[in-house]
Image (cartoon, rainbow, N blue to C red; front, side):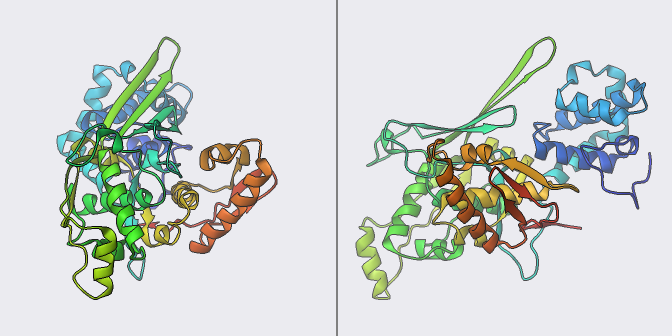
Length: 401
């Protein structure tokens, strides 16, 4: 094996033979492939398959470009072409302990919290675009669909009933609140386990999230928390090669259990009590992520600065833009990226009619200015037809060295 010390970091779009022969560098390529959506999972069998494809590329290469062959094999999921010999070689260089260590390293946060300490959370990688509706959907609308790489992600409203709550009272989470709640809960779960304690009272939770305290926000947090815990996420991934089409469908329940207890009183009465300096609303709530969803976000979490998100909570579109830029900037290389505004219109402003392009450009420019005001490290410029992200932009949560 080659020693990777002193060499440039590996890049998935420029893979070399040394990258394929070194376990640490190949592990970093696996991390990048997961982030780009070129590889789907970081389970034990998928790690072994990834290394087996590296062995296959090294043995089958006839043009002195094993990196290009390997990338083709990975992006097209050519695991059915792996021979027993390639798998044995991969297992020999890894060992079962090696597979375990790689899986654990992929699950650990790799981001520096900065100085002074920054409170940060995590979003699932496939939900960084527009995870929830920006506004409340129509009463009969039970699903929200997000385009994803090689497929779609669908968020569906819950379908069960609870005491005092009808089955159709559950909705698809919407507005800025679930966009702040989800990364907070996921971040706490990845640090401390699947069950997250949300504080002894709503006053404490709102203070932790950086949201102003008032009867409207009390009600919004309680309602959106139940909608978030009840919803289901379905991912559909489809790939076509020369001979057949492969489709993977995965269903995730966000929560396994929500233990929710609060006094039987109106929020207005509780707010009035709080204003008289009495005890704030106690509710003793715990939120337990389902095991499948927990593993889903562990595979490739996207870090976000919760304080920055809280400053943008009045505008779901700006929260989505901030989260997407945080992920996009982290994975940039050594050249700027230019994206058509028509694509960003579909992605971030589905509520604005596509025919009203001028209105979108006006509002989107205001959104970009607001997001860059929250994090000046985003270096973004707008023209009449494109948005350009400068490659010298810095993510809000920097990777550990």
